[in-house]
Length: 217
Image (cartoon, rainbow, N blue to C red):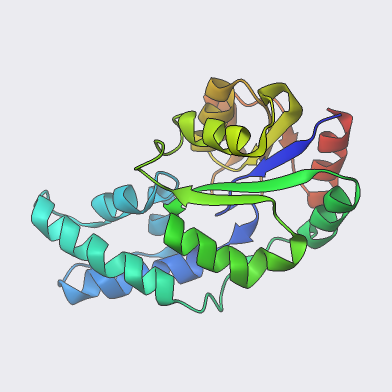
């Protein structure tokens, strides 16, 4: 039996796209850049806030990118995340996993300050044992395995005792490089084929299917 389930956040547990897009577009508009549609925002997500801004700003000016980034992160931190929701069926899955004795963790590429806030707002009742966003002073962001290894070491869990759940090619590359069993969920921010191309072989199309796959590891 596995002991720990590590979840990606955006596109896996929470549908955060509209709150992310709103904050990003406010920051872009301040500097006269065009705003992004939902689809355009989705294409740029998954690699962390800094990369999101780099891909959203139609300029190579590093100082300008930094200004937009420095506006975007505080906007995210102050957001009430009113448009962010838990994906269908995951309420029951998280409760069942916790009741069955599993430890639960979130490893996100969001800035850690933002990750802690949104998880407190939306996930506090589920009793997650470990939550981290991007903390460059301690580890590298996904797909580098060091962020997952930091989680495992913090909880005293071996990689053989953990399952990683995510929705993007970044997540697939992360659990493969870290040597973890993983499940790719298909309700998130990437089409299934992108996960297949990244090397994912285990998928869940619904929350109940995800629970079934986890319990069978």
